[in-house]
Image (cartoon, rainbow, N blue to C red):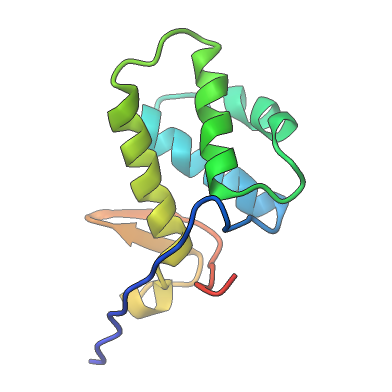
Length: 123
């Protein structure tokens, strides 16, 4: 077994999403980690897309998701929810599924396995 550990540093204000599929997957990931799997993703997709530029940064996407959610009322424990969203985006952007022994369409956070497009750390 190879040791593939390496430090990855990503600036969420610099890293951009490249495709609509990536944006959709990232929105779903942020919503799920920040607000729970029971939150209806359809409530977010259209409004968040409308609030984003063509190639949004991670920070722009997370902020847009939280603005859409604020439109439905106050966000309890917003700081903790933003921290969970940040952790999920860190995994979304830096986890190499192959190194985790997973297919390229998946990544793992703790015991959870999430579907996502594969990302390289150099994008």
